[in-house]
Length: 346
Picture 1 (cartoon, rainbow, N blue to C red):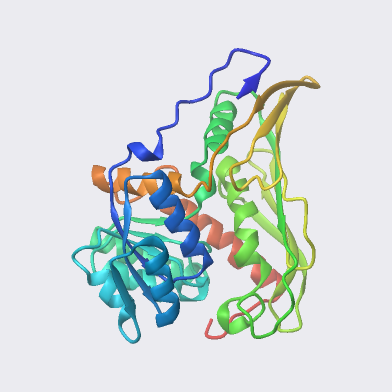
Picture 2 (cartoon, one colour):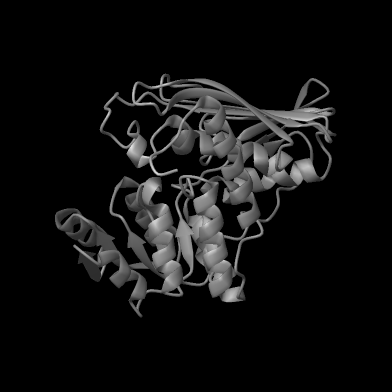
């Protein structure tokens, strides 16, 4: 960090210091690849088992990351969840399948980290949370952004009142995948759409600093398949006299920036704020502090959080509590309803 004043950054525990866990991974796509590289390269944890619908993909994953156990075919996911050599489960399947797979892990009594979006909707999220609480099992959504050094430092500065009273928090995340009505991005039966895939990031970012909104307003456009193509969501906090603006899109590559504005100053986050980024704090029209970080990958911080929570006997994370997951899912549900997006079976 470089700065024009003497404030020291919050001392963040290094992921390598966290207790080790033997992970079982459900799903062998690219997101599971990043997870393995983060675990193996930056923590003391290991990947013990991989389960995949595709035997070839599962074997490639095992060979690449030296994973001892590969499961595929019918019952593969259950077998990994029930494996006594596995300490915790990471759900890396598409979000339309998270509900089913999280319940398998919970039924097996395993701590579980569920990729975002947590589930398709609030009803499913409520059921998963209730099952974990009934079983006394640790559960967390894999919102890795909350655990990164720049976010920890930004929360500290906000909590110390350096920005004054928060007035507005904004964030965007847009990409432009090729349109394919059968793909995960655009198929209603796969819970497609920009909101659950990308919009969960800016909505969660706003929630991190403002909490649950009093009202939600969404405007946007739909893809030909009926899922959301793009949207702007306004979150209103009348009791705080604050607002949040979240933009997500499959129609354009956006700047992927975020800003926290208060009565005494603001924090401007750099490109890809949701990953290992930096920020600048501006007060009285003057750049007062610049925070930068050199962090590879970044998912190791959430992996370390799970390990520390499990070692402590905690059933959820204080940084990414289950209440936050449910709050964000409630916003996503309301936005989808206003846009007219309904998934099959809802």
